Length: 107
Image 1 (tube, helix red, strand yellow):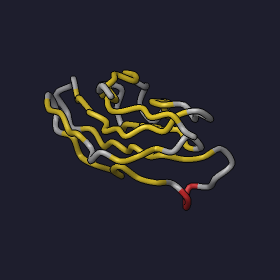
Image 2 (image 1 turned 90 degrees about the vertical axis):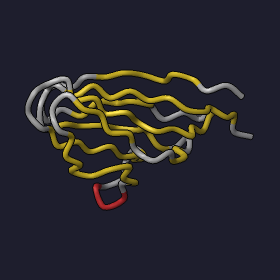
Image 3 (image 1 turned 90 degrees about the horizontal axis):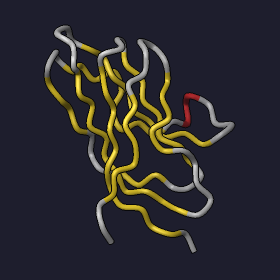
């Protein structure tokens, strides 16, 4: 099983970007690299959430993590089941979120 690149998103400040959409056929073992391309710090949040779930049911990779300017932060690797999607948001529009990992078929 090879490591795969899933997606890169650079959302505007406060907007939520979908990094990995929910899948009925695959699970994902992934981490997310948060690259702050700006000079000022950014506060980032990365989480998994199923459709219809509330904020209390989020599975956080990181919440309100400070990423200084011109640096990167990588989350721990966690499994996103096919019922959940992976989302990311930042306090400014200079943060690029990239996801790589393993994709496995659901049986």
